[in-house]
Image 1 (spheres, rainbow, N blue to C red):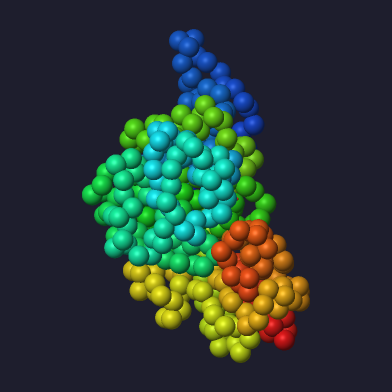
Image 2 (cartoon, protein in one colour):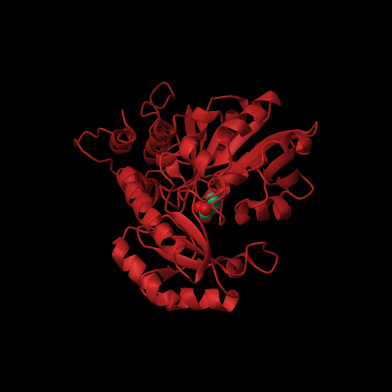
Length: 371
Ligand SMILES: *Cc1c(COP(=O)(O)O)cnc(C)c1O
């Protein structure tokens, strides 16, 4: 089946007695035991499993081409489960522009437990220099936030395999529709399902999809079930509902973002556009090789200082000035001010999550805001 078809059918696990075409929300926290003590319905207690969550995990596995998935209550708890599953003393190689929430976890929660190097993963040749005897894992994020850097998943996977390292890809910006890292050699794909998979800015969630049901998968499954940072049945229902339109939403996001990137690239008040679909993007060829589209996220550097950039985000009327991404509505933000005083993000950088409004309205809004 093609992704469009899987997205609509793979999560429909429940054919209820009432003949529901779409799955109902299963709120029960506990399930009947049979006379033999077993659980004939396949579920025991909803922290461990729930029909809505199982359906969500199934459809994400299908879309990513993985052996199994674990759904979490947020992207951050999904990522944290990976760090928790590592042996204390392990070393991690992570990108220098890693999603700031994960960088914060490593620096403030895993400080003294794990060690890490934050390196530029777009340059694969120097990577072996960072591998130490206690290195356990390479974490990549592509496209990256907020500079839309692309790293070569296949090349990184090769290095990870040669050194017997776990290789995780945060594929949130791409969604399962645009890239499938497991097919390129990744061990685990991570998503903040809050973003494109949810797609309507109304549900928080995260997922990990595994290439194999191995020892590391087992550890993470235990963290999910015993740690208990799981999404509610209603969260899972919303995500399942959203996934049905994911492929078509992503097509719209890609189309709009491509047009907006081309428009901004010609604009006299814009110094730089970061969008992997532009031929001028430094990793455009890698993006073409490993992605089926270039996504709905882009960043720009405006000419002038932070105030000039802030003036633009304060002048839009259709774009909402808010953080996050991947929803149907277009969002715009002055990124440095949300990341705090220690950020390396340029002060004149504006990040845009291109929504599904008509492109002419989006361009007209930025036209007046840029003045
Ligand atoms: C948002 C985001 C996360 C964290 O997800 P939450 O659902 O907000 O916890 C992780 N990685 C990337 C790339 C993100 O954009």
